[in-house]
Length: 336
Image 1 (cartoon, helix red, strand yellow):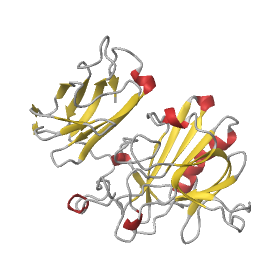
Image 2 (cartoon, rainbow, N blue to C red):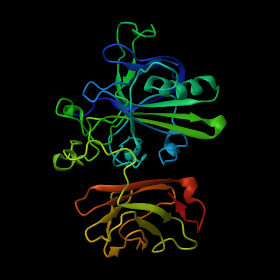
Image 3 (cartoon, rainbow, N blue to C red):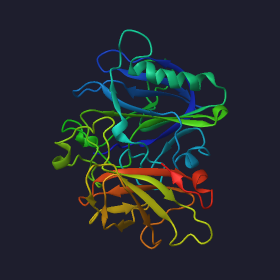
Image 4 (tube, rainbow, N blue to C red):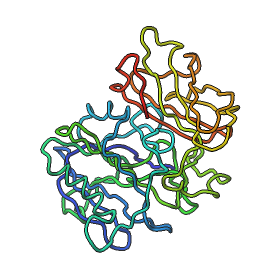
């Protein structure tokens, strides 16, 4: 059963407590100017290996920020589908999942564990007068009793601040697509957004498009992607907004990073609306391939979008995103 109350909380971070105990969670007290909430962030996995995977983007650029900025403070229920504000680590091209690294939650010393890593960024948000924190996950409450960590009443909050698909048998009942959790911090004074993304090592990054369950034939071989693993073919650039009439003039550039020639027959490109364009031909070792887009099969919107490269099995090989701001420069190619 997927998450029942998936959504996003927007508010102002006030206080934190480091995770400890048998099921440690990093706790964040947040106000939406009317109610108090507690954000509970898993910093240790209940399923071995226990160390949680993380990735932090200190300069987060994605079309979703165009939707988050105008959002009023408070909790907002989200439709779990593409094109909304819902998060999906695999389909949303939020970041490169192969860059995630495992980190213990509590190590003696300073600035060396997951508790301290999350604290570093949330503390920055607390210190700034003009700031917002966004927590994606599942809501609980309001409860009759006081919150057990911060003492406010009624108890109220959001948890599952991590990837919520591709889980092991024990937790697969919570799987679903477009329902992943994460933390996004907006620092207007610094003109930047920060994305904090977490996943468990027992989860898989290739999942069914309908159920969010792991694809066993793939996931049994590599769980999770090795940190820093090279992709066979990368999307390295896109001409999104050509000069003059756009239609039929947009293009992508692919790079073969391997020492071997690759046959693209059966491979495809997909846009944010899941429309696909089949590829063909060969791409030689170490070479780039310029791919003109017809405008009939897939479309690169000037309002921001995502582009995904799929192999002949339909598995994601690479994915990128671009914002409305990046697409505004007519005739310029965006480099990823």
